[in-house]
Length: 209
Image (cartoon, rainbow, N blue to C red; front, side):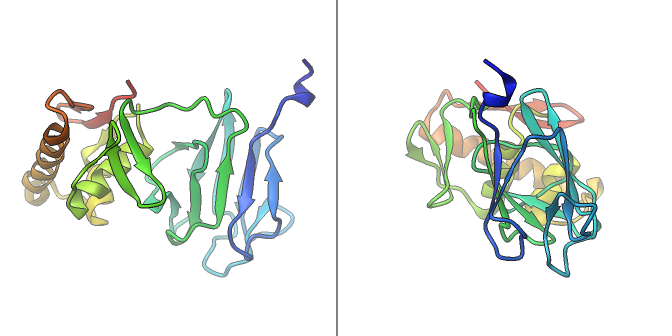
């Protein structure tokens, strides 16, 4: 089959500040921002940077890079590094408010085993059973879930939980408590549940199987 006949992923507008209703992602690289003539995906919002973010095709996926000083968000979570977009991810620019939704034409997605996020209730389920999480535990699990299969540093996890710089001397014990509490909540619903891999001295990874 010709490459031209294959389905292509899309970005769908979720707010009128985005210039077009949808963007068919046929190129290997796109710039997102408010600078007309430079940004292929134009967002007319004063708080959005002139060149705010970049989308880059890597293999069969698109990776989102934040290029701004006032942040990019995926699924209401602050982006702290390159992020591989998954089907139905939502993108916020300068605030968590979703402006764009990514639609994968071939959503052969990396999953996290029995773990699933119900986007309607924003609750995590383990094998269809709801997890009773504190706000800090939810923010940590959400960050790991959005970066599943990737090692997330302790600094990145702390930023996701508290929205502040990680200070090892002050925050290490609190971060350890959030992680251990989250792992305990997972074991409450399934004694065999242990999807969070600890990388000593580095951070954590949510396993994909």
